[in-house]
Each structure stands twice: as structure tokens, then as C-alpha cells.
Image (cartoon, rainbow, N blue to C red):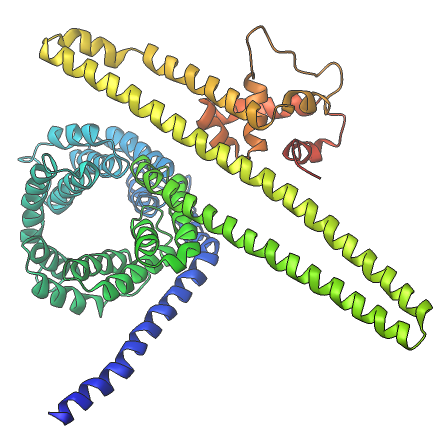
Length: 543
């Protein structure tokens, strides 16, 4: 009995630190990969550029179609707009060649991409338009996979007790259909085998299959990220939070190495750290910000909404921690100042005793000058910190107000739709859904809220902006106008959004229009045109 207890104790001493060490190493590796994310993005973009160069004026339409397919696959988890562009190119080619297999393949790619970004209705309509009976045999597996993906994303997006089970049932039907099509012994075969067991609640069997598959995969494959995410899900369901954490980190590492911008592991890891590891709040904040950057880079509405629900909680906690640290810093600086004063008095006393009054006073003046300099710097730092905190609070307040307003309007719109459906006023409902008035009204309200919020943050923006322009180029607003389009473009630049495509998306302009506004205003600059936007970025900044 004593021998058994000794063995257990001995194992516990060495295994627990080993597990903690593995997790710490993985966390450091993930932090390193995040710092290198631009490097991995460049690798992916170089790979895409190499594919693009394969298309020449001499390339046949079929060759162009096949190369475009490869480029689409690269972009499908990286950038929505680019993936959509190459789908459109292949759609045109398939129409010219009039090959039904190509047309169906384009439809499947379109449905897959729409499901990824949350356009579920459109994706399902496309899938229902594909004739299963005439579908080419080579596309059958893709057909089932695309349907499975659509219902999986719908299930995860709804995440309730009413519709999620319905979508899950349809998803599992297509999962089974995919599984029947796969070659036994292939990596996809073992993945779907493990996934089906997971859905059936056979957690141990599923984990065994997926761990066996994982040993054959490289970290730079998308399937590695998916498999580790599923293993993490199994560990969580079994109450094994340590390995849930470990495999979630591995999944996030793989997402970074593969430059996958359509990912979920990072935001899930951020929430886990926030809830279970309060001491790692800095990491949680960094990871949720990273997840938001990925979602915005990909232009994924679903992921952006999911992250936006979690972001305020983590950011608020992070800001509270920063305030506490700053308060402790001020206390420490006060203590140091007190010690410095004590040191000065002690030095003065010593030098007085040895009758070196002149030298003592000289050193005392120097120390006093240094202390005054430190106090001045501390005052400036506190002023800047107070201003920064105020701006953060207003940003958060604006976000909450806009989110609340949007939710209320969506609720009103839903009630209207429900009322029309109950009243069987389908024509009215169709008119409402096709009307651009609602969108225009929302845009008007949005821009008005944006103008008001921005001018609250930077009340002297218009005056300071006009000061950068000559008399001819200064902007004169019309009656009741808070900001005009030109001012909104540069307001976004002041907020740090400098990319013309993002500005265009925000203001519903074309990138060329944004470029024209920027160029037009710079013509009247009284400062160096190349430095004009730098001066705009400094408006309202404490110097």
C-alpha cells in the first residue's frame, strides 16, 4: 500500500509540472507565430502570385479555369473578396465553354463561400438549384461537403435549442453521405470517421481516431487545425480542461502558420483565458484583437459579429487592469520621489558635516532639477493617460450605443416581418425587403451618429483641418451638415483607417472615389502634400 502511494505521489510530482511546461511552451510558440503572421501571410501571397503568373495570353480557357480554381482555394480561407473574384472569372469561363460540370462546380464554390460569410439563404438556394441527378460523379463528394458546411455554419450561427438541432440533423445526413464517398484509409476518411463518432457521443473512440490521424498531419495543413479543434472539443466535454487548452492552442498555432483568416480557435482561446486564467488577461486581449483583425481582413461578417459580442467584455477587463497598474505605478513613483527627497536630505546633512556646503548645494540643485523634470514628465504622462482613457471610454460607449440601436431596429424590423407574415401580406413584405429606403435611412442615421461621435471626440477637427488648407481649398459645410464626404474620409484617417478600400467600404464609396477625395483635398494643402495625412493624424493630439 505504501509503495502504491509513493508511486502515485512520485508520478504526480513530475507529470503535473511537465503538463504545465508543455502548455507554457505552446503559449510562447503561439505568441511567436502571431508576431510572425505577416511572414506567413507573405508566403501565402507569394504562392498565390506564382499561380497567377501561370496564366498567360496563350493559356486556353480550360487551363485558365483550372488555375483560377487553385487560386480560389488559396483565397477561400484568406480573403473573401478575392475568392469571390476568381469564382466570377470561372463562372464566365464556364458559360463560354458551356460545360455543365464547370457550371456546377462554380455553383458549389459560390455556395461554400456564401456559407462561410453568413449568407445562408443565398447559399441554400444555390445548392437547391443544382440537379443531383445530372451532377458529374467527380463533384458528388464536393456537393455533399458543401451542404454539410452550409448547415454546420447555420447551426453554429443560430446556437439555440429550436433551430440548431434541425440544422444539425441535416448536417449529419450530409456528413454520412460524404463519409460513404471517401476512400477508406484516406486522411479525410479518418477525419469524418472521428467526427461522426464525436457527434454520436462516442468521445473516447472519436479521440482515439483523431489522435491517430493527427500524428500523420503537419501543422501547416488546414486539416491539422480542424482536427486539433475537434480534439479540444472532446477534452472539454470530458472535463479535461488542461488538454482542451493545449489542443486549442495547437489549433490556433496552425491557423497562424497556414495564414487562415477564416478561423475560430483564437477567439475561443481568448474567452477561455479570460474566464479561467485571469492572470493571462493581457494574452486574452491580444488574442481577441488578433481574431478581430483576421475576421476583418477576410471580410467575414459572421466571425466579426461573434467576436464583437465578446470583445467589449475582455477589453473592459483589460482597461480596468491597466487602470490598476497605472495606479500602482503612481504609488511607486510617489514612493520613489519620497526616497529621493530623503536621499537629498541625507546627502545635504553629510556634506554639511564635512563642511562641503558649496558642493552639497550644487549637487542638491542638480538633483532638484532632475526631480522637477521627472515631475513634469509624470504630469504630462498623466494628462496623456487621462485623455487616452477618456477617448477609450467614449469609443466603448459609442460601440454600445450603436450596437443597442442596431439591435432595437432589427427587433422592430423582425416584428414588422412577423406581422406581415401573420397577415399574409407577402407583397408588402416583398416590397419592404426590396426597398432601398430602409438601407438609405440606416446609412443616414449611421453617418449622423458617426459625425456626432467623431466631433465629440475631436470638436476642433473642422477648424484644425481647414488650417491645413489654403483659402481656396477650405471646406465650407452646408446648413445642418456636420461632416461632408471629404471630411468623413479624413475623419476615418484620423481614427487610423488609412486603407482606401476599407474607407470605401465604410462610406459606401468606390476606392477610386476615396482616392479622388484624398487627392483633391491635398491639392490645396499649405503643408508638404506627402506629410498632409500625418498632420491630420495629429489633430486633437496632446503634445
